[in-house]
Length: 226
Image: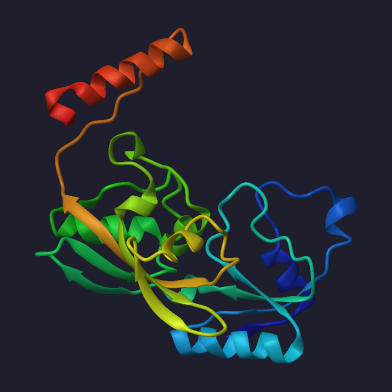
């Protein structure tokens, strides 16, 4: 699907925190927005961009505060939210294979029905799986399990030249996590998943930052959280 009306493309470039108008008004306009449904569609968009000398900007749910969509030249946008399928669950390997445009709340809902859960997820469950990997953030349970890049089995990358699956051992892996889609588009992801455990949420207040950090250190050393 292609969207090329001036109003709709302008809406696609809005962010939770807008750049000052004096800056944003001087930036080139997004020419059109495409919603691919397959890797082949993405490859075709790269070809279109090269033919017409247009930059290609990938977009997930655009839940980051600022800087998601800042075109420095005439561009086309690739909205990946139509690539939102759960492809396969391997319960033996504890991996979940999904398309990059799926939202985290859909993944959690699916896993819950299987008695499974994610190791970590972003605070915004309405963000997309591929978007968070491209941002490279920390989130819920990161104190215990670490950065999201360590909790992914592998990703499928699409660039103007190739389509390739890479895992964490691949030297190219680091080029695609946290680089905001500048090196290529994440199209599919294999996430590591774990057995689900009962949990409760608590709100704890501290008088100082040092007290809060000390509490976290003690909690992480507890046998129940090891």
